[in-house]
Length: 326
Image (cartoon, rainbow, N blue to C red; front, side):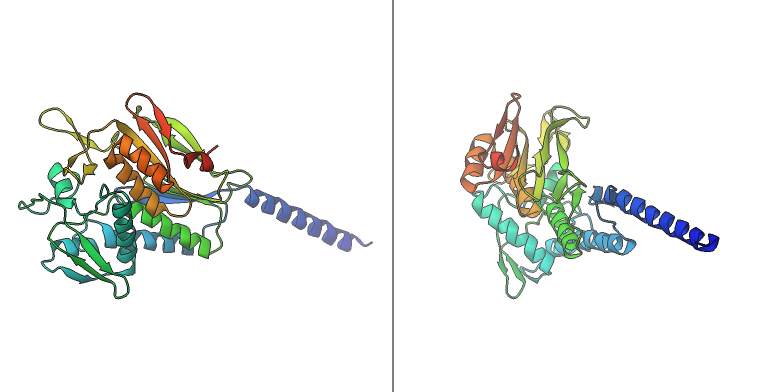
């Protein structure tokens, strides 16, 4: 064997070794992108490389939904509807999807979930107040013509999609990643989460905030041991609240039956869902507004996995919870 041929073999062998090392390293690497939107932070962690093209497309999805659902943007689709004097509107597919799920959860929760309380929320200081003529003394309704994408409402009350839009955005991003063969990921937008597939050689792990502590102390660790896909949503008053003029705590969650800030024994409720972050987001709010006794019964009736953290240090799980969490 000549020296020249021997050198080439050495170089080829070294190249192959480097390729193997690089491949094994990539197989054990996590890739993360993050940013801010909806007044909070978002992040996506994946075992598959997220190229600049995919990152830009994901940001476009986040921005698109913001311009559908945000009450803080005067030119968003829902804000334009809120300010309009009309009662019938041609709507986007995104808004149709959001309103359809919201209407479904409203019905299944006996009306404890309602997205037409934006004026009440504004009066309490939890959403924008664009004028001084806000007044809401009743709950209005809406209907959707799904075939023709027509929204009809029966009053000028405002829509507030803050309890469902982040969950919908997480679901849209998950769908995009799956369509592009990125099957192992954790998506988080302000605590609305989807875990799917594997975290390299293990399941994903998500800590649920202990509502008794202001720091990030985990009360419970959730993994997707029993499901490749798992959506996680938590509703609670431990961070988003105000102190009223009388010194009492004012919650951002409103009871649709009373049009007042809730006051019950739930510190937080976490919902797990096997197919939809949008449903998980909406149900978490519905159960929080409902109060523990009714919410626990309803959760079991609907076969929804729920964890209730109560103000007496008690933690209660619905029956479905034990099917999804060890």
